[in-house]
Image (cartoon, rainbow over all chains, first blue to last red; front, side, top):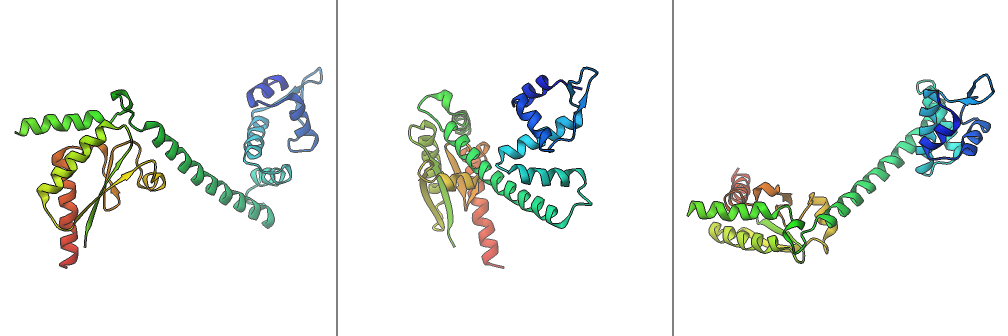
Length: 137
Length: 94
């Protein structure tokens, strides 16, 4: 079980944000210790990580609330919740394809051979080939 | 039907010069009229390069198939291009 400060630090959010999630019922009532201080379970943390990831993807709090409902009970979800989850999945897959292309492009551009040998990992292979030719006569 | 050999290069890439010379020799040795050679600038054709799966320069593609960097020897380049010519020959004479 974790204290609110630890959870806030781990997720990179403010303690007020964590209290707000609970207030708007994105998170069920969090357990309390004898002094009334919040204690977050691993299940709470998992739910919070889901909320943060979904927010980073630009999902609204309303959408996240419905997706959390789906997450709790995927088999028994209402058709409109299931449709939302499907639509969000498609949106994520499109974003991933875009991200992968962007990553590959930047990876290629950063690995392009510079004029110096250090910038070019393929150089050795081609030089190796010259040796091969010399050996083959 | 032509077989397209593409060399993808970048500015200031010393290895690209050697790859160019190597490919010219291999293509000259194979001396096949079906071989079409073209050179592309990776930066100018970045979308195509990423689609091919290019991760570094230089890169060689035969009929849109990227050859792994390990293929950058005279023997292997020649074998890869000859194999493509041969498979095309089989396809057209079936």
